[in-house]
Structure formats: C-alpha cells, structure tokens
Length: 114
Image (spheres, rainbow, N blue to C red):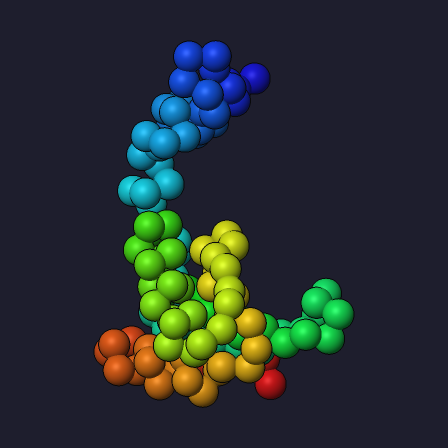
C-alpha cells in the first residue's frame, strides 16, 4: 500500500513519496512522444455533446512547460482549453492554426483523425 496523504505534508506522490508540491517524478519524466517524433493534431467531438475540440498529442514536454505552451496556444487561438494527461485540449476547431504554429516552432506535425 502506498502513502497518499500525510498530516505533515498533505498530498503525497505515490511514485516518489514526496509532497505533491515537491514531486520530482512528474517534472523529470517528459510525456513520451510518438516513435517518429511528430506531434499529432486532431479534432474530436466524441463524448462532448457535439462540441468540437482540437487535441495536441506528443509534444514531449514536462508538465510545467506543457501548461505554459497550452496557455500561449489558447491566447493565440483566442479560446479556452486545458491539459489532461499530457494532451492539450483547445475548445473549437483550430487544427490549421495549431499546425502552423507548431511548424513555426520547427516541429514535425501530422494531422490525424480524418
């Protein structure tokens, strides 16, 4: 059984057993990229009551950098969004704009999902 909460430090990371604010395992391990190194950009509506979102997968950034990248992209697109499990979700259909911005950053980009 792993330690999840401590009365001294609060929430604990189950992997490195450090307080959640000082967790080293999440910041050290970047989200894994795809084998070809390309970032995948897609549009999805499944499970969102018909509302479309743009998904960006495989950026290969640690959580703080991924959150900062998502914030900049939300400002560029003029929309809301979030980061869930290493995937950036932007509200609306912004696939073309996101692909252009990623190519400007020198990344290899692929559109997936139709």
